[in-house]
Image (cartoon, rainbow, N blue to C red; front, side, top):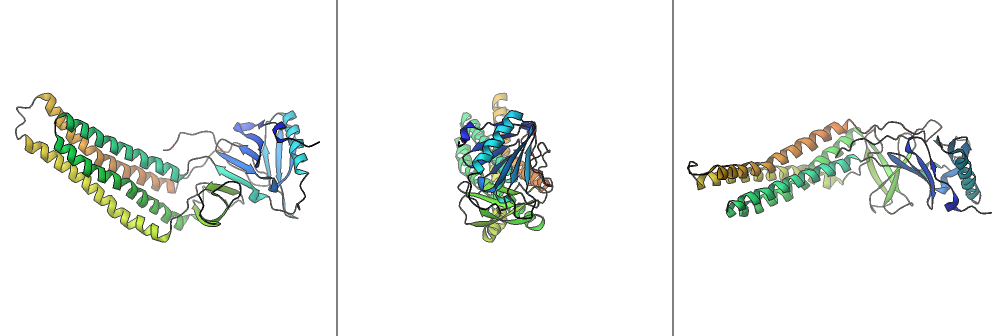
Length: 343
C-alpha cells in the first residue's frame, strides 16, 4: 500500500524544531534557520525513542551525515520514519551519491545586507520627515520663499544622499570581505527560481536567493558566519560606488549645510530687530532654523551609525546559540532563540 504525504505527521521537537514533509522533500524549521532535504539526498529515516534521525546518502566508504531532532512524540516519530522510508523505497537510482548538497540550510537571521538596508531606509525617512516639517512650519509663517528653497535643495540632497551612502558603505564591506572573508562559488539550485547554494567550511550547503545571475556566481562571507553571504558587485560598479559615491555624499552634505545657512540668513535679514516679534513668532522662526538643521544632523548620524556599526559588524557577526543537534558525524547546525532585531 502506498504512503500518502498528507498522512504523515508533523513532528515538533526541542527548541522549537518542526519537521514536516512537503512536496519538495523534508523541511526542518528551526528558530533561526530552515533545512530542506530533497529526496535525492535522503538515505533513510530512523526513529529512536523520542528522537528522529535523518540519514543522508553517502559515497561508498564515507560516513553519512545524520541530522537529529530530539524530544518528539514517540508514536509520531515511528509513523513518520516508516512512512518516509516507504516512499524512499520506490526509488530506482543508485545509492552511491553524496547527499550533502541535497540538504540545504537557509538562514532566517537578517544578514548584514538586510540590516544595512533597514538603516538606510530609516535614515531616509527621518530626513524626509524633517523636510516636510520644515515646509509646514515655513508655510504657517507665510514664508513661501523658504518652502520654494527647501523643495529643490532638500529634495535633491535627499534623493542623492541615500544611494551614495549605500554604495560607499557596501563597497567598504566588499573590500573587507575580499581581504578577510571567504570567497566561494555558488551554483544555481533547482528547488526554487533564483536560488543558489554554496558549501561552508564544515561541508554544509547553504542557500540564498539572488535572482537569475547565471549558473554560478562568486559569493563572500565572514569566516565566523558563513550564513551572512554577500554577492560582490562587479569591479567597475565597486569603483563607481567607492569614488563617485564619496563625491556624491560630500556634495549632498554640502547642499544640506548651504540650505541651513541660507535659511538662517533669510530669517535674520527679513527682520533685523526681534524686539517687535511676539514670543510665538520667535519660537516659530527658531523652529525653522532647528528643523532645517535636522536633515544635516540626520545625515551625519546616519553616516556615523551605519559606518561605525558596519565596521563593528565586520568583526562581530551573528553567533546564535546552539539549540538543536541537527547534524551528527561531527557537524551541528546552529540555531537560536529570537533576539532583538538589529535594524
